[in-house]
Length: 178
Image (tube, rainbow, N blue to C red):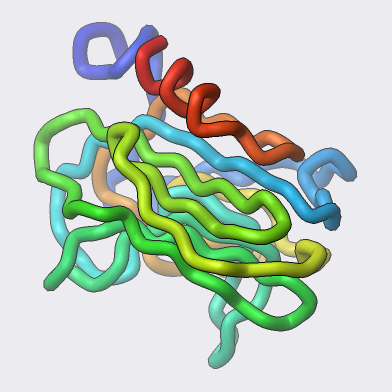
């Protein structure tokens, strides 16, 4: 809370059992061809596959709709993953995330490209199709099948936003500067 957050209050996660699970809502189960997920992230410790926010669960194979998470600890980059009709696409942030500082991340899918933003720098890959539906809940700080959780985040998260549209580069810049 207060000065340890990006703006006002934030969510703090210990990397072992803290998380937020959103209630089920049709607005969170968008199956159109556009989605944006943004968050301010303060990473406290490095570990593989830390989940930031998503509607996803690993069951031996990838399962769910979308996910923002840390890649392996060797790269310390954020992956943005979207499932369109059973085919997952991934975009990786262009630079690594440093420990102990606030970082802005955004994942954008516009129906033809998937973008990964880190502090307003971006990378992208081609990806088409309609977003897959998922019964998994939206979670922050982990991923969950509704009962079990996995790959907990260690740090703080502030200002999570989920849009059922693709924000433009200018809208991402505006949110980053806000």
